[in-house]
Amino acid sequence: MTPRIGIGMMLASTVDSTSVVVVRWAAGDRQVTCGGAPMVDPAQDDPGTGQPLDPAQSAGTLLGKRYATEDGTVELLCTRPGQGTLALGGVPLTVKSAKPLPASD
Image 1 (tube, rainbow, N blue to C red):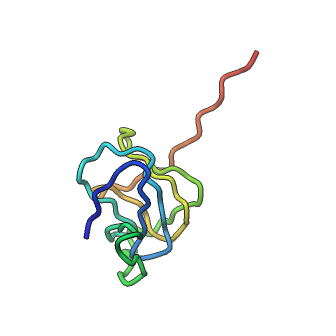
Image 2: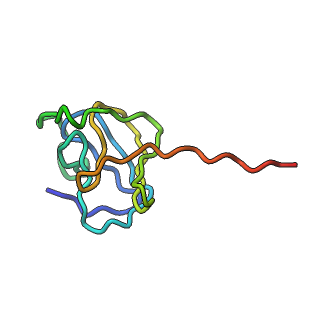
């Protein structure tokens, strides 16, 4: 079952140990996947690892990194790493780079 996604919601992978928190969401009812399988709300569904990992989507996730769409409408914070690639509507999300702080002088 695809959850209704909103800011602050936790999502869990059904193919590996990946968990994320939604930081920014302006994608309506589009589906977030990890390793090619839909992510679920761990409060309502048992994430488990029952589905197979798609080898084409196995770049992995890194703890503490933010993953975002190219246009910045969706941003997810990885709270538990895994082997699957995060994607939105079949398009892989990229690691968001840190912005440099302004000079203080």
